[in-house]
Length: 414
Image (tube, helix red, strand yellow):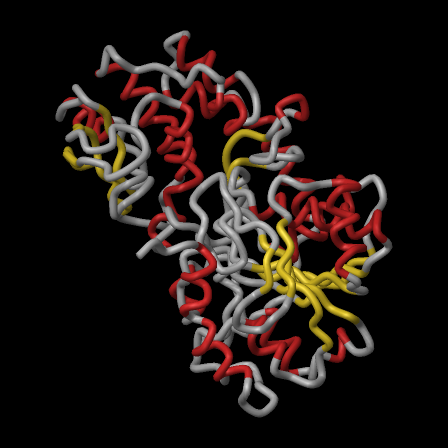
C-alpha cells in the first residue's frame, strides 16, 4: 500500500477531531518553571486580542500546548476564536516534508480548515494568499532554534511584509530561544548575499526570541511596517536553555530532533557548504560530521584548539540519506561539555579550519553555499588563505558589535 502525504495526515485526523469535539478548550495548566508562552498568555486572556477578527495562523508541528495539543486544534474548538485559515512554512503545517519541501495547498483533515503554503512565497504573491484566505489577522507561532539560516524567522519576516501589503494585522506569539539569548554571535549578513537563509543583516546566532525579532524586523528592515502586536513570554530569562522552560520539545524540522541539535546548529550547519556530511541521515544531525577518507586526526586537531565548552570524539557513521548515503565515513562527534561557555560559531569555524588541514579532499560546494550561510565571502576566503580560527572570528567583530547595539533596542526579556 502506498502511503501519501494526505493519507498520513488523514491517519491522525480522527484523534485530532476527537479533541476538537471537546468543550471549549483552554491552554494547558503550567507545571512549573514559571514560564508562560505567548499562546498561554493569549488563551488565558480569553483571546481578547483576536476578538472580532477572522484569524489565520502561521505555524507547524511546534505550535503546541504543554500537553502537546496543537494550538490550531485548540483554537478551532474554542467559540471565542474565529479561525478560518492555516499557513504552512517549509516542511509544512503538519511537518510531513523534508528540507527544501512543503505540503502545498490542502484542507486539513482534522479541522477542515484550508491550509495555504507560504514556502518560497514573499511580497505581493504572499500578500495575495493572505487576501484570498479572507483573514483579518495573521498569527505567528513557530518554535525557532536561534540561527540566522533557519528559515522560520524569514517566514516570519516575509509574512510580516506580506501582511503589511495586504493590510492585515499581525500577531506574534513568543516561545523560548532554545540555546538561550545571552548574546549575538558570529558574522553579520551582507545585504548582497540575502537569500531565504538570510534576508537581512543579523548575526549568525541572533540570541533573540521571535517576538524580539519581529520588533527588530518592523523597526529596522520593513519598508512599510506592519500593524504588529506581540505577546511576549513571561518567566523566561536570557540565560535559560530550553530545558528550563519545562516545555515539550517537538522537532521544528526533521533534522532538528533535540535541543542538543539546536545548541550546535548555528556553527556546524556551515558544513552544508562543504563536501563533508553534516550528519543528515543519522540520529545525530549536525553533531556528527565526516566524509569518506577522514580519520582520527581531525578529532585530535580540533581538540588541540582548546575551544571552550566542547570536546571532539573520533566517530564513524553511515548516513541513510543525503551526502554519502549508505557509505561508512569518518569524522567527529561534537560533545558540548559546558553549554554556558560553548560558542557554536567559533566551534564551527575551528572545525572547518581543521577539516581543511587534515583532509586533502576538503572542498566547498560549487554553488558557494557557504557564502550564503555565513553572509559574505569572508569565511571562505580567509580559510582558503590559511587563516586560523582566531583570525577568522576576529574578522567579523566590528560588524557584530554594531549589530549588537541595534539588537539591544528590541530586547524585551531580561
